Image (cartoon, rainbow, N blue to C red):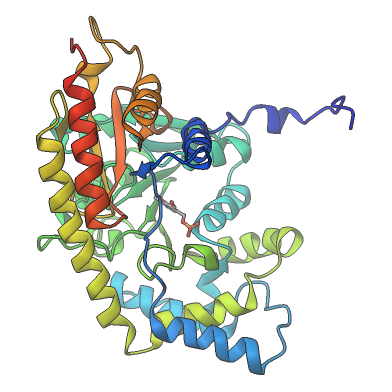
Length: 404
Ligand SMILES: Cc1ncc(COP(=O)(O)O)c(C=O)c1O
């Protein structure tokens, strides 16, 4: 077919995913029979809980699979309202909840429903790669604020204040974070809420809590509503079942916020995707309400906690790699700047990640697309043996390199 096809300015402005190059290379090596170990996964390697799989099987065998209502089935919206109500210690009406095809879709709907050209959305770097891209697609302007290992990869009021201004519409908080695993304490969240409310009273906080149940060593994710009580309730909650219940492929996420936003986002959803998949919504109801699920989530959390220990131990043997212990999610964010500067062999983390894949047969994700050059994200959502062997390979490969 002819390639003479003009794409829109909107599509042209979307950068190709830098992580795709590594994934494509990994697939190529695997196809050539190489045993590639992957630290690249952005999803749990487990099956969804038993009750979830049973709910899908039963509905699929016994019921017609019709369109679901656009904003979500009443059963799921009510289950979400209850779940988020318990976490945020605040009542949500059904009309304040919108179910979408993943939390990514919830965020896309939010930005499309709320942003006008030039509206600014503030996010700390390193950030989840999709935030700036989605803001840009909706006509907004992503404003990134660098954070560092010194502040535990967290925004501080001092760093946030200078970028807040009349155009600020949203400040995104993601705790625990992708890609760093860093989680905010209650007082840290409150301090951020205070500066946003004081300097930009028109702005809203977007709290992306998708990893809130995957936390370790006694760290507890705090709700922004709870932390910012008496400071601001201009908060929109983004959440979903993908990570907690190992349900990424079901594509169910949700947003809770003011009913005007929910109706506008629902109208957008009605003209683009319609409601989330009927079977997946049934699966999500089971995840949120079946009493047997929590024990299986506990088992996943225990496995992740063990793997976090294994990867930290394994990377400690790798020269020129500095890692903070993450509070949650299933990633470590490794500072490899000594391998990509000065006399080092590689100039960028993207080159280093490509070399690690080719030489050590280990897939990692470079930090540059997350807004943090000189780093690699390693996911420990993989089995213990692969983590141990993968770290051995990384350590051996890096030992052979000159560092800055
Ligand atoms: C920080 C963050 N938010 C939201 C999502 C979206 O998840 P989903 O669309 O599967 O619900 C992800 C997925 O990687 C994520 O890392």
